[in-house]
Length: 399
Ligand code: GAL
Image (tube, rainbow, N blue to C red; front, side):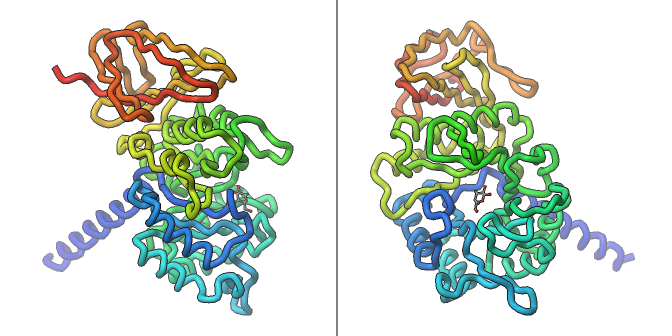
C-alpha cells in the first residue's frame, strides 16, 4: 500500500512538473533577435557573439529580448553517422561553445532547420533526421528552433511539424518551437500543442505596404492577413506575423513605430532583425519602448483585433489583464488623420470581453509620448501623421 501511495505521488508530481514545463515555454510571445532579415546567409560565430554582446549592452536584454537565433546557412553537411555539421570556417569553435557564450551573457540560443530534405538556401534539412537533430540541438544547449518548409516534397504539414515537435519534447529540454510554413496550411488550426508560434504569411520585406512577386509582404499587407486570426493566439501558442524590420532602413521612423506598435497589438513574437551593434537612437527607442512591449507581453495573452475599419483609418483593441486595454488608432493613409472620437458612442467587445464607456470611465495614457492624456469621459482629439499610430493604454478610473 505504502509503495502504491509513493508511486502515485511520484506520478502526480512528475505530471505536475511536466505541465509546468510545457506551460512556461513561451507563456508570453518570445522576444529576441534573428540573423535573417539583415544578414541572410552571412552568419558566423563572430557576428552572433557580437550580437549577443550588443543585445546586453544596448538595453535590449533589459527590455525583455532574450533569444539570439541563427537562421539559415550555419550548416554545411552531415557526417557518415548522419550528424549535422556546422560550417567549420564560420563557426570554428562549434555550436556548443557558441551556446555557452550566449548563455554566459544571460541570453538564450536559437537555431534554424527545415522539415524538408533541404533548407530554403539548400543546406541539409532535417527530413529523416528529426530525432537525431533534436538530440544534437539539446546537447548543444539550444533553446529555440525555427523550422522551415522548403523542399518539403509533399509531406503533410501537421504530421511533419508534429514529428519534430515530438523529437524536441523527447529531449526533455524546454525548446521553443517556431513553425515556419508561411501560413500555407492554416497552422493556426493545428499548431497549438505542436509549436509555440507559427508564421501566418510569406516573408516580410522592409516596406510599409506592398506584395512582391516572390511573396514578400509589407507591414500593412501582413497586418491584414492576421486581422482575423486573433482567436487562435494564447499563452504558449502565438500567431507569428514574421520578424521585425525596425532599423533596417526601408521605412521612415514613423512607419517603424507603426510596425512595432501593431506587432505588439497582434501579440506577436518580437524578433528584432536589424544590426544591434549600430542602432541609431530612434531605432533603439522604438525597439525598447517598454510601455509598448508590455502590451505585447501582457499575461492575459489575447491578440488584438480590428474593432473599427473606416477604410484607411482603423481602431484596434487588445484586452489586457486587470480590466485594462490597449487601443491603437492606425492611420494607413498618406495624409494625417484628425481624430475626434467619442468613447461613449459605442462599447468595445468580442465574444470574450466587453467594455462600455458609458458605464465606466478609463484613464488614457499615450504610450509613445509616455504621458497621461485625460480620460474616456470626453472626446479624444488628436492629429495622427500619415502612416502613424496613436497607441493608448486604458486603465479603469479609481473611484
Ligand atoms: C524562409 C523563411 C525566412 C528565412 C528563409 C531562410 O522560408 O520564411 O524567414 O528563414 O527561409 O532561407
